[in-house]
Image 1 (cartoon, helix red, strand yellow):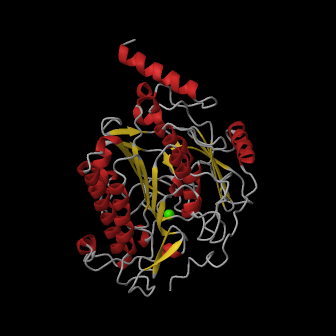
Image 2 (tube, helix red, strand yellow):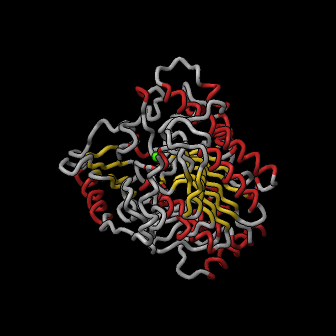
Image 3 (cartoon, protein in one colour):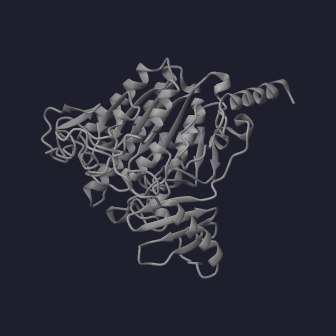
Length: 463
Ligand SMILES: [Ca+2]
């Protein structure tokens, strides 16, 4: 063993000893350097909507470049097939059979005892900021982000409020921030909310450049309703495309705009000389939507779309970049999903995640098993439930019950990525194992509380 490797191993052992009960000892704590974390989640961006994935119409040069400088995942899956549950799984490390927010309800907040990534990172000394769509609890409820570890959260708390890019207010730490000149019209107004949200994201990074920070950019474009400022450069690029639907042009412009802003964030990290100590994630939040007569073909090879537990509802683009630490241009088929983000970020920060999570840390996959000091653990099972649907992954096998009164279907995704050949009858033992896991995975869906009746559930009134 070389001296360097020995020191690494010794540091690893010491960290493991210092944290009894922690199964996955932090690899970074021994070095005393916690990376900054930027997590950009683009609302609805589909797996095949990147230009590096061969999309014919959409342009994502900055995300493509990021993929060349980092690791692109082919089997990263959303926590859920729609906005709110996928965010709750991401924030809590729990799958949708355990987490609190399991549907896009306006009145189902996280509970006070739910522990988020931000709370875990805060304990590790991180500055924590969230910008965009929260979706896990309205103002005046136990689900509000400022009660869950965020120093600042700026944007929309409520799902439906986030449908407008020209609302007459946004929310900062539970308080309304009026947007003068906006009437609530979906497509026009004086202040484009996403510019404000992007500016706050940038400001947060600048303000916290000298200490570890977690910048959660849950940005809303290109989610509808599709309104964009006339002078937005990306709109100028797409507004004259020969596509019938105006909304399709706005969608394409929004993808290009967000891509440009990701480039600006990467440039900012370089300018602040924190590029080498910042890990950046860029991903979608649920499967592609497939609107506009499926013009952009977000789910090309997959069955279904957003809202379903077929691959089209779950498979998302996922790129992770950390110069010098994550191998440039790597493509990984490691199978993981949103509940894994919590333990992964906790390990990078050198703290322990809560006990009651469903995720596993993917640090060995990101940094290499040598650097992590251990082998990558695999999921035995992954689990989702959504309304009447249930799905389980076990290796290449995918079991799905598409509705309550329908039997489970079974697919081998290694041969059948389009989920077309149901092999449930051929492999009853495999299916029985997966169904048993599904039964074990569902717990009663508990709900948070309203703390201030004056504030709660009024967040969607933006007109
Ligand atoms: Ca979404």
